[in-house]
Length: 600
Image (cartoon, rainbow, N blue to C red; front, side, top):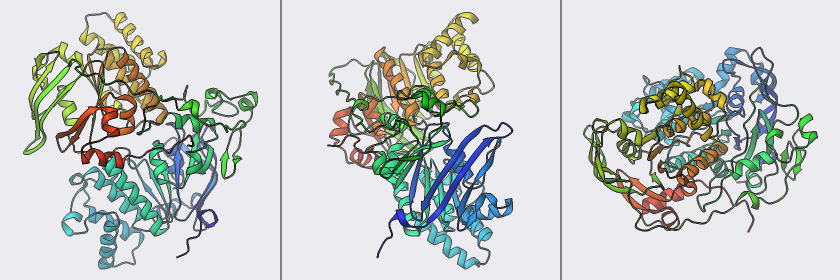
């Protein structure tokens, strides 16, 4: 079989001059987007939060979120300009010509719809010529394509009866069942553990290749992008700044912004200094003249500040919108951090013995025994369902159905909230994965923080305000954040506020539950740098994560959980370089990694 190279196949989708503005303001969110994909090609769309990735992804389907509108451009699929169709025709095109896979399957799937019924409904809507038996055959074939059971019992289940990975496979089935020309995937693996994520990525790749469906994969995780896609498009402040084959992007990036993103990515194979990009992406309506990245770029000149650069060939096969593309190696951005010496015989801050946990009749933790050394970071890792969060919540005094013994500095403490007084709750603080749910959205950040201070310490309003401002400065946020509400902050800013609130309690132990999983790489690097500083200042950290590259960057020790049991623990570099347990080896094999940026 002869396969036509991607570069000379006719495009499955061609985007020309696409622009989306804020309604009534004329401020572009994304602008001047030109991009074409061949059938079967997968293109990664990357950039920081606020770069316009999701806005662009929605616009490809002719959809503009509330408060925005598509003001210019064309999206051609099968000789039809999607943006020129009326609303009824656009609805028909969605699913049949272009499909969408959102980030959160639990929010996207109808909780009252059985899996089989939802798939049948999609076929009935778009292919009414099929009879019941024909639809049933297509449904069963499609669920087999996404590695799900095709029996009646499974198809009769509701979404809540499926695991997160199974829910995501159902969304893929819904996207691919009509064999569209294009699929847009918006962060579809963010909340999945590395093993499930690896399975989903393999599935996406095989479906696109087998059915010759073009895919745009939106992600903040550059390691995943490197594993999956053929080309990578880098978006900054609503404009494409670099487009190239992924092998070129990850071996010799030329735009300073792309290089900054890559310098912020942790590497599972070695400990290295992560460098966050200074400053923040300017929002629509406040972007500077000229190159939007100029205020954050060390190479910017007067030309960059006055004229907007356009995409042009900077290297063979690489397009970049930059007046001063970089051609040097990235040695200076990949400073290696020496492996910390393993300190035997450290004292113990928190000790757990014989911890068991159950949800009803189902036991999820089995005789867990461990010790957290002070002023160190211990990582707790494992697949979804391994018991990580159950154990972390038990240590934080938030567990239910948990038994066992805990000691803090040698003093027995209760394993549930009932046995902990106010001072003990202050000393052990918990930072949740979703900072938005942890902050009162009706109160300003200042009010959120000062109420915590006054709850734990006998101080007046002025002193509480001063402490809150100090905590905000400590997590590198500007003072004006105090007067904003959580909804007015980015995800990374909210996560820093959540950390600041925990620090106001002056804790001895900070439990961080997947706090960087939804952050873009630059913000993640900044948060990890903050945690490293806190650790150096004497704070003890328990870091719950499924990302082993992050573990290599931040942790001193690692505890590996599998089905509620500790299967391996020890110094991070010992475990990651020489894993003893087959389960740990599988986690490492399934973890995406960024290619070597410095040629041998």
